[in-house]
Structure formats: C-alpha cells, structure tokens
Image: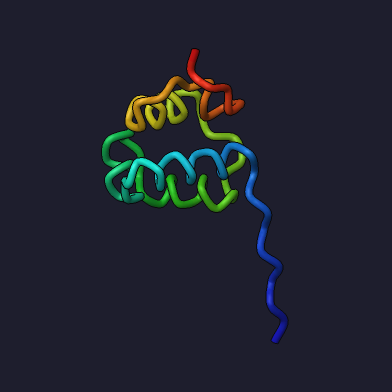
Length: 78
C-alpha cells in the first residue's frame, strides 16, 4: 500500500493554524465564532481549500481578534 505524501501547508493555512493555536482556540470554537463549518476550517488549515472566500477570511480574522492582513500576508498589526 502506498502512502500519500503530506501536502505542504500554504502560508495562509500555516498562519491561520499558528494564530488559532497561539490563542488557545479549538477548531470547533473558531469555526463557530467565524460562522463557518468545522469541515471548512479543517480543510483550510490542511491546505485542501487554498482560496477561502473573503467573507470567510473576514470572519476568521474577527473571531481571532486580528486584522485580515495578518491572515492574508502575515503583516504585523500596525
């Protein structure tokens, strides 16, 4: 049986996961706060959904208490 190689995380997925874990928030809690499904959040964090909608990015940023730019391009809040 052949094992599939792990897909490298996109910069967006990596930042999202790092911010969520740093905040001590579960995927379930973040998904609920951002008003998206847990499945959608998991797919985004796993890099299976590369282009989340703007409304999803805004909801995630709001739920994490960061500016959307911190998720999109990793800029520090100014």
